[in-house]
Amino acid sequence: MTDPLQPRLVDSHCHLDFPDFQGELPQVVARAAEAGVTRMVTICTWLRNAPQVRAIAEAHDPVFWAGGTHPMSAAEEPLATVEDLVALAAHPKFVGIGETGLDYHYTSESKGVQQDSLRIHIEAARQTGLPLIIHARAADEDMARILTEEHRAGAFDCVMHCFSSGRDLGLAMLDLGFYLSMSGIAAFPRSQDLRDIFKEAPLNRILVETDAPYLAPPPHRGRRNEPAYVAKTASVGAEVFGVSAQDFARQTSANFDRLFAKAAAWRAADTA
Image 1 (cartoon, helix red, strand yellow):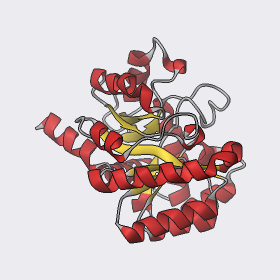
Image 2 (image 1 turned 90 degrees about the vertical axis):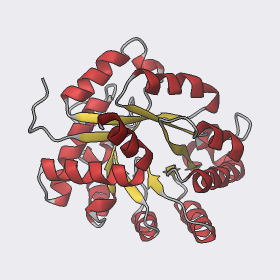
Image 3 (image 1 turned 180 degrees about the horizontal axis):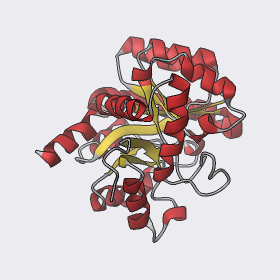
């Protein structure tokens, strides 16, 4: 039975369709609930897998979904169209566009295609009113430039998922009114520089996530991550911002509801 005093959290980004969770999803969702994780967003990174990801959200009440083309695979499949993404958004539990973005660490040779894909996803976010979910790695300058240009051309909401980029990009995104999401990386002992960047952000612009099955926070580092472990990252987040675990959970959940308004509306309708 869940402790009524336990902080109530949201895992804003995970990948429950990955083979790591095959045959175990009911248990994974149950462990999340036991840890106080009331909702989670599972992300489709290959649009051809959208039916499977949608089915997970349909089968588990606390699970919502989002979809897009991951930048590392942007050159490996046909570019999504705005119409493709808008059509996905018709599903009642589809709550975000992406993840999309730029990754020059492993796939710099496809940077042109990645940028084209990113702009398509941005337009879909504008048309649907759903938040853009951004993956950024080793591409800070281009990321800041494109998101700033596009936001000036027409506003959209956005979260920098698993934020671990430089201070300048973080502050530029906050200036646009975007959100930064803390993953298990922020809890690693050697991530003090990253924690210092988060400390400069307003708490009302922070989300928490696992990016499961990756990036498990201590004491689970090196093992499969899962939504229940977002509580470990949240405890570090509370320390970074100098607030109680309950206040950190309350504020980040409110932030999630503000950004992912479609998920918040689903919860309100479900409990009415």
